[in-house]
Image (cartoon, rainbow over all chains, first blue to last red; front, side):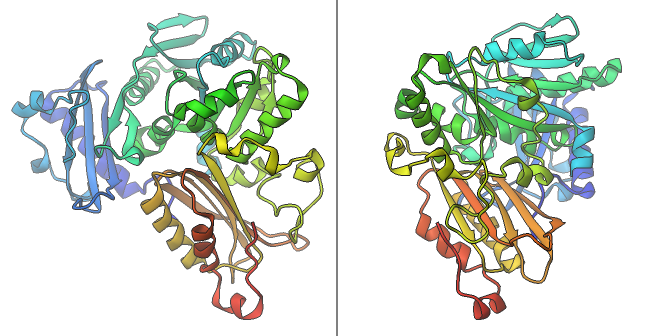
Length: 98
Length: 362
């Protein structure tokens, strides 16, 4: 049957866990905006579901990475190492398709 | 959903082309004595407090989760600002009663709307109440001809404030309303001068609340004039002299397709078809809404979609004296009516097809 825009509890808990790990990994404050969502990718070659994470280290600096797994399957080891933080900065107009 | 939605903070998105009157409407909302505490997000503004309200400025930042896929694009500036607002409000113990987002005149409302559904953190705390599009009656037909953004703003609207009506002749107004109605038959049109639309008609609409969808568009989600089950009332198009041939359809490429069937549908088939359709054609199908008469179930199946995002659920039972039907509307670009109708008719329940002729009608 048709889904709803909302996620089930297990999915929400998994995404909240990923947000928490992201804060820890990259030394973000409790109020730093962290976005985590599971998206269905329709592009050729993409896994059917992937988890997208974004966070802001200041108002104009967004960091972005993906884990090619469902949110529930993501572990702490799937997150990039902390020293990659600067490499995750999104340059406007130069976003990769990965 | 409505019980949960009622606990969420409602968000009104005010959109419309440059000079349409969005800021005038926003000022009216903020200055009217309503006793509510608003957070307002506008572009290119600092963070200031006016009385009880907080106005926060942002710069438009598209967040493409998959490069080039409009269905996977949200507004990064909104995510950042809303996360911060909610965090501060929670910490201060003074939550906002409502949030208003005023977009720029050139903003695509698609990523704005998707932001509230794609981010689970925001979706669990906020309820997109409406996308309200303010339209300059004097210039809208020209803008629909030359601006993709103006077309998208009409397509995504839950309601349209047709502003500056004093600047055009009555017959021109009717022509504009026909054009807007063909592009987006789901959005009621409120005529206004200097954005003087009654605020109780603009706020608290519940435009994305699945339980309210059917009641919001009583004139559209019933069979059209001439079809079985049609009710002659104030929403009946022929009473308003709607003449599709005389509208400005060819001046724009956003249009709508409405499908009606009096054949009962197979719930599994219609669910699979809608899911496949939005996944494969979601870039072109900007909005979709519908009510489905399902075989073997006395409840109405209702759905809505925003690009690839789709949700649906069973609602109240059909009344015993109520004509049962299925009606779907899609708003978008490059919509192939024949293809959509074939897909829709193929969802008929097997027994219904044996007993009744296919009833899909334009």
